[in-house]
Image (cartoon, rainbow, N blue to C red; front, side, top):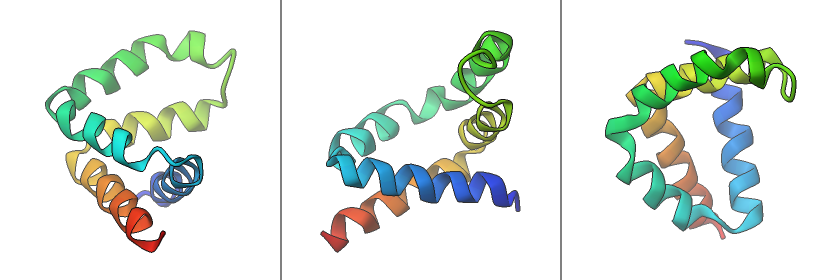
Length: 86
């Protein structure tokens, strides 16, 4: 398991819950799950530009998260558990 991607899931879930956007994000992720791999490949193409604005590790972790449907499911499950805690 990639611990940096797992830590990213935790950070994303916490931040999204803190902003109160759990429901819209879960709906968006569920609706676009079939396109997640395409999104990860688009991030790879845009990585040189993204490196100007965000850390390369963050982009790599997002690519890993989007390319793996199991990790995407983990993020959705983590978001739903955050919603249940509130």
